[in-house]
Length: 230
Image (cartoon, rainbow, N blue to C red):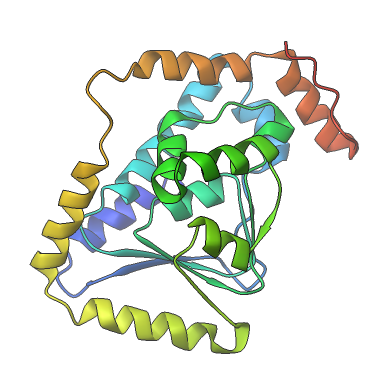
């Protein structure tokens, strides 16, 4: 994640780059989510959580605000932070064997406000509530219906569908696309009176909770968590 910002910076200043595509290594996953085994080290102590969020927030904001078109090429699992990474892209194209879900509620961890913004912007408040509160899995067709993705294709035609779409974007006028994208992003900006510090405290409260510790234990022990709301 920490290497995303410098990569994007180099692409931004390369006139030969007309569109940036994010995809996973191999066919199993786009991103399978954060490494749960690292949570005790990276997402428990307040200073560690703050540093983790700083890196993740900076990288994902760099992608969200990137001036050139961005496409998430999704094959397989797109989970948790991986889903937010996809939602930072302008367009999401998924193979029909892909799986989506947001498991924060099953772990008791805090979910940053910008990630909630990305989710609501993509799917609307009603669908965002369903996705977040149920923490259930969605297949590609369900994800398409909810707006998590814009295009889906059978596995055998997936690469061609992606290439055809990229060709359409790359053929268009770069300055026009950049201007239109910036205007759309501006339209999506938060209202000036949003209490961002309160949003941050709400997230930290989750990481400081007994439920978060229980969520990590339950995951490691492969059992359902016993959350108590404290």
